[in-house]
Picture 1 (cartoon, protein in one colour):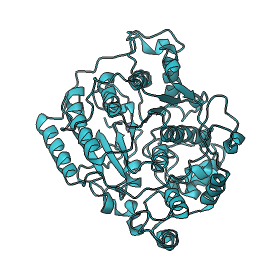
Picture 2 (tube, helix red, strand yellow):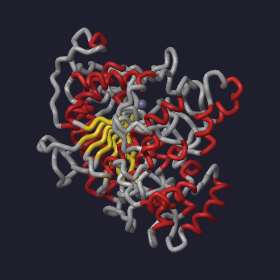
Picture 3 (cartoon, helix red, strand yellow):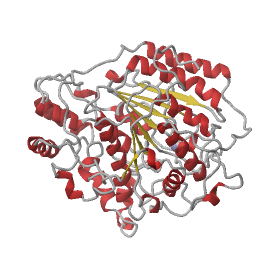
Picture 4 (cartoon, helix red, strand yellow):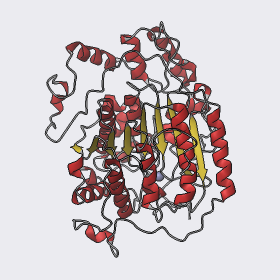
Length: 509
Ligand SMILES: [Zn+2]
């Protein structure tokens, strides 16, 4: 298979085992968006049950995520937005009409019982996975994560907090560059927007484009200022099949790996790009979808696998179970094991399902043009941009959990396996976390620049959307190349920003 000419390991030749950890909370399947809502957290429990009965749990470290705390969520999100998510309940929402509207909570993103705990759980898994990768695991998995539409101050497309942005911020503590790849059928807009002006995170999104939620992700949207050419968008049409998809995925992502050379990769494995999805319109098989996981794994770079969309839930469970097997290097039997959700998988009771005979509207010519355009953009990149990166900021101290480390007070125990053995580090950490940098809008941003100027006295500028990285760097470390503070306005500069955002709930047709 073509890989865009990179010399890195090719697919299928690498049988080496990887050190894999997997995050799962037994409560996650109980959260309920409401009657008729297509997003069903129950699919995470179905996936887990299938993993268990396929015998895969024995091959990896199984961890219960520690819930992300308010201050953890506020590393990306606005304080007032997180305070709102924390306080809103189905009973009190009638009194909060204006706030609901302001934060886009209501229809696509309803208020339901336990909403805030749900956010804490799925974000805790993704940040916990990032911490595990920072400590030597090869692959971390959080199928409850991958909620890529959430914005700094706004819910969107069934997503409330953006666990992906939070996980990437954690990875940036020790990696100069992080690659984000998104194979959900919807554009990964929240993640792209967060990192639109930096060259330390490259975002690559493959998605249905044209009269489809969220409406962004044009091929011509490539990033801004320092981030120019560090956002890649691959717009696709209905009915794309495995072969067409891989004819773009491998050459483009292969080239990205070659020129960007990330220290870690985050792969959002949204399963609404599978054939037969309730909201989707692609025609990928589970093997075709999982080929993306296999390909990313082959580069031997720390890999965070996250969930995302996926609305035909029996296929979501099939897909993420199979992809867990791919991560582990274990091929799973096609015959469905007997388990509590066995009846969902009739009439065939198999892991794999055939794609449909729907028309593939992506012509060879279109695909060739898209590939050529993106490879051309990549050729304009400097090889492996770098920041001077001298000392490692402290971990976010919450998730180094496992099933028997459920006590939240254990977080600060230096004898826990938090690797927080230096008491000075704890002092430093609390100092860092007391620093509040708010950027409600561009006006506040100007004030922030004053703050940044002080903090970045001997540096050049500020890393967008990475307050804590900046703060910890500036506090702890002497020189570090940081970007211009004036570049932090992706939202305002982003030409994609639509005045009216289409809703995701209703399928296109
Ligand atoms: Zn989606």
